[in-house]
Length: 119
Image (cartoon, rainbow, N blue to C red; front, side, top):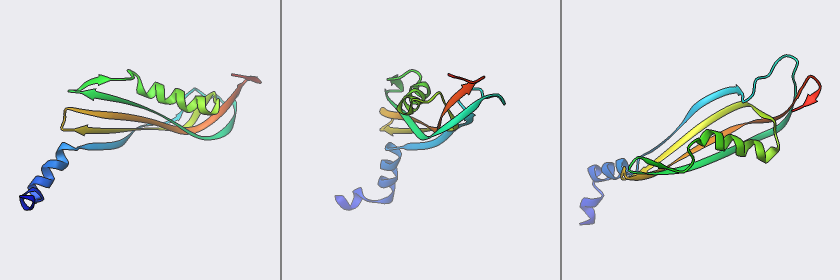
């Protein structure tokens, strides 16, 4: 019985049922407009993430995962904004019935001064 379970077509079918993917969905120079008169200080690299689920393609969780992940990334470093920003999205499905979506925002946290005033 186990011999037939591990045959290539069965393994391929199981892999299809446990489908998932990950990709970079956005790259941006900054999360806030920066002008030539702005002075910013780099704090360091930071990241934030937001995970939500779905059942039968009905979303459960955050309605704006990018905004939630961005807020988390900025709050951990008390930043005014992020530069060199990337947004990655990972989706995992189980039997196409339910799954999770994780959105991760990464970037360099910055403190910004506009016209000599902190934001």
